[in-house]
Picture 1: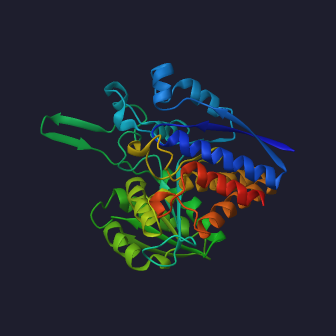
Picture 2 (picture 1 turned 180 degrees about the horizontal axis):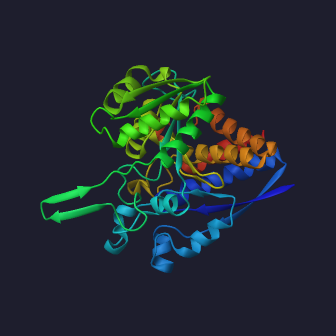
Length: 356
């Protein structure tokens, strides 16, 4: 029986509650499906890292993650960190940069029992994760942003062929497994060189996948198209900032940002991380919705199965996913979704449905 070492970073705010709930549901699904075992490694991140190592993402955590098959990352509350830590990359940005997790995959799909603003939809956004307009991670050393005078700031956007090619290949490979349609989102009519290069390279990569239909939209038009006809789209590929904004919009349109999952990957590692934040205002109240990070873990299991050719991981992923979806469809929901279940009650309900 294969054993996989999984890092667990509980994080800040609601992070410990929803991450603990996710591990419990994963254990229930593993027991039900069988065939694999997980060795969970708890590691400090966020306030825990600051308190123990004066670093929200200490080197000891990075070194330990290097020895894992991947990890589950709870949200962080970097906005509340001391000033010396705010000046650095936040924990998720640092891990994406440190491990070169260039592909941020964020699906948005309607679910039974959850009200959607746009009707039926099933799309996935591939967001380039390492450059673009994210100034804290688009430089080899330092930050790509400068304050020239008290009243003048210059922020750089970085676009490279290498980054565009690899995120485009990831998107087109996924499209081949889905409905064989890719939409490129850019702003090449104004940012002619930067996003123009991104569009050009994605189009060139698309020629290597003749079965896939390709179109493209400017980012401003794309927001309107998502609201009006989300069901038209299959796989969307775009640069860092546009992808961040579009995926939050898409998540809310199909139900709630609190339900939105994502994974960050390269060829060898993956990080499961919900799209939402740490919600410090409800931390410790046992009312947080853990679905986003649970479904992120399902995605992580699917990635792990593909990486290691292990169908038993797919069985665990399906068991976990079906338990979540059945629970929601039967009306057991947390308060943000119109239900009355606490985080603990919701987690127990999923585990019970998996077991039966």
